[in-house]
Length: 211
Image (cartoon, rainbow, N blue to C red; front, side, top):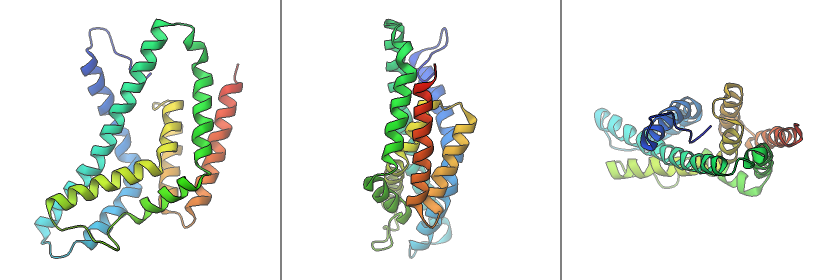
């Protein structure tokens, strides 16, 4: 479970191990939809030579995944808090599946909201079509951070569902990766989001109903 430390392992060591696992999962999950954004950025930057453009691109990538690193840190802290409560009050463990089911229901419900559709549109646009990013290091860094924020908001409900089920569930991780890529790349992202929402809600109902 998130937040669990091994014997003789410090909190910082456990956090570092968790973040390494988190990023090892995030990179392949986000790449299918992130690569087209990077390509659009490279086309939008004017007046940068080859070497300079590669450096700016690297800053965009670092900025983007810095947001996901921050989110991983928050996820670890939340998991550590749940573990602490579970260890202090053992009866809480009985209600964790119900809590996970409620989280899944909430995450699935978000998929049907206008807010979700708006965040998807912002993420799919990237940025820079109306106002191209400045061709310098600060502009590249800010562009990467902006992409990370917009895209984390657009797929936040899917990531929440993944955390509720368990990051180590490879089938769920593959399904979430597919859903994220389809939402960002398919011609009708709202329909894709709603299909994913139905699946998440059903998973929530089954999780709560499971004896």
